[in-house]
Image (cartoon, rainbow, N blue to C red; front, side, top):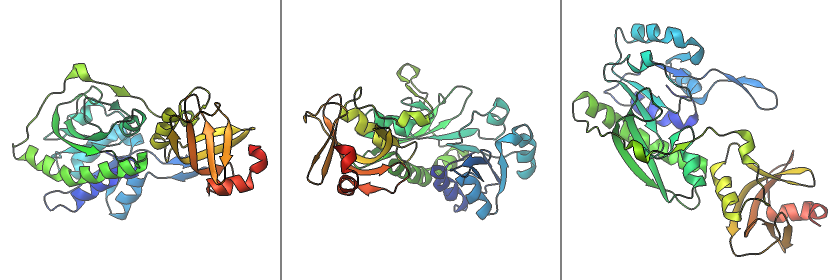
Length: 301
């Protein structure tokens, strides 16, 4: 059960491992995307079709149990979930011989919920990791099968960090499933008292407010919300997408004030300022700070 690109490496790891046979894939329904509102299948759906796998979408949820039992010729050994994006009903959690296994991109019980990668960046964490857990009816509250930590580099954005965690999960998933099947798994309960939660990200979360947010807070949002939903500010009713910036915590510029020094572009915040490196005016291409200064000098004056 999976939907976005981040879930493809662990799926591929099972396809390439001689001990496993993936009988089918369940993913979210096709959605309208882009300005043209074209209907697009999820990345996992596209990958599964390329690999000639049976694919079910979420609208078939009431029929899925029958389909899976038929495809497995009785009962599947495992149900594996990675960034599926939907809550599974109890009958599916109980359908497989060894249970439903979830790949979660945080060190549980920290950051249960829909956006653990983004939350780690928003909080300025130095490290994160992956957790393989047995699923139950509560959100990300099942027993832990294996955890592996990963250092967050200073240059990591949500997409690059997600790719690293995805590759790590792919490396470990076959081992986790084999340990369960062969009775070697060391299962540990979560400390429910230490649980923290993160919410589903909305498009408007990417709006930056230099008058109410510090340079550090805005920098963390840029990292967390790249590539989606992206971060932006408004200058004279024009939307400017901030693609990459770094904070200067001690620099004093009035909040929401733009300043240029040669080819350098600064934006004042509630505390400190942002050094803008890459920016994209609405409807235009991505450009460096120096290109933006040359092309939009009147806007900045």
